[in-house]
Image (spheres, rainbow, N blue to C red):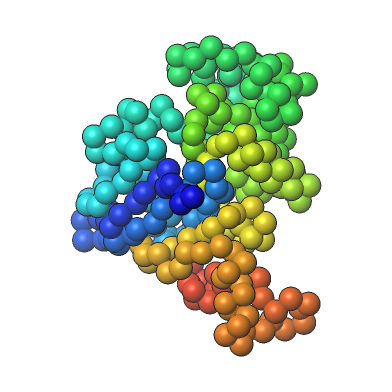
Length: 254
């Protein structure tokens, strides 16, 4: 049985005046997969995701999400996706239970704080204020808020940045659990080991274009077969090598 795309992007272009941020990008995300959008700073990843999330208008091209067009049915798309907020999106002096009630009200959905906090193992922190959480707890809570409307797709933007290794691995487990419950996950990350472990497929974006799309293993095997060899490493290459090979080694400014 052929997999069906839940997100389909065809010939997407986004221009800001004379600058082309996204230059004729096409790709599909299949239902039930963890899909990584990877690339250097300024490559066009965030702009691409914001168009898919209906947060930014495109210049041209076609984007379909769960069968809906971003042009014709943006409200229908908003109802079936969850987008991870950054820290600035929360009221720091509200506790987690109060924030869940607030977000549930915004969605017009009745969800109890307990059922949402259980999903991310934060029930014991229900009365804690958001500002008093650790980095890993804040990230887990932010993921909980993406799940309130029972989305078919969630978008996670660098969810483990700044976390210690243990918190990072715990978050990996949580992301896998979310996928196992039937939710498609689209993730951006600068950690190639993270993409290698989590993602079924990844797309590398550079200069507003997709320069490669495949599974992490297929990318690595192809690079190794080309004769690439890492120095003083047991394995001949990893996904970070693919990243550098496709996008270059020069410094990129934030």
